Image 1 (cartoon, one colour):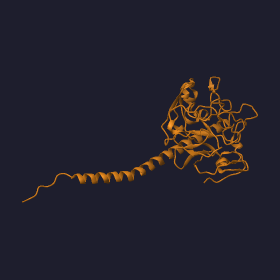
Image 2 (cartoon, helix red, strand yellow):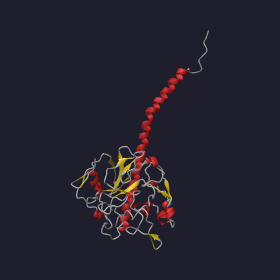
Image 3 (tube, rainbow, N blue to C red):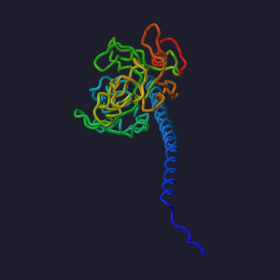
Length: 301
């Protein structure tokens, strides 16, 4: 007598299959996440590369680098119906380089509000977020940025949220003729060498409040000499931490270090454990790669 063929799995067999699938997923998930982060980090580096090239194009055209602008509440400076350039522009470097990022329409927009709200994809790190606006009751919807210019560690002209005018940095506060501010900066003023001086890097952000109005996430990319667009080298960079705001620091969403573009246009990774010291008698590696004229060069770890 022949036996009937079994046509279904038992409960135990199903549970075993489910367990095997769960184990495989747990093994594959971290690998997939690592691949995604590697791709996002590469895209972030490419964004900084484009920013560095825009700085070079600005220098080629104007013979000086973009500056950090005047103040967080500065209005856009217009001359003859067109936006003024450095050193006469109240808005900061991220606005000043728009024509060199194929964003001249935003740069020339007759509406300050429209310009403020224009999302510039190259200004965002995909490891942290997609392009985003934040509402401010004074100015409306402002497009953010994940990148900040290097203001080094000179404390001259320190006030309120500003840690100094950046007189020893490649990106200084707008020159207005005052003795507390350096003149416009050209590549010739970066005496430590373009390949040894950090230009623009990722900035630290309290990710638990992304999308809300924060002290360093309110005026957006157009802001002049403000935490939104400028960071200092008083402290080393740090990885984003939920609920922790360090608006004067560089940093990023990446696990091991942040990306930065140097004055020669090269993009490198800066580890969070980089040697840091503000003792004038022994500057740390971090301070020395941010200062444009300290007289020495260092090897990055």
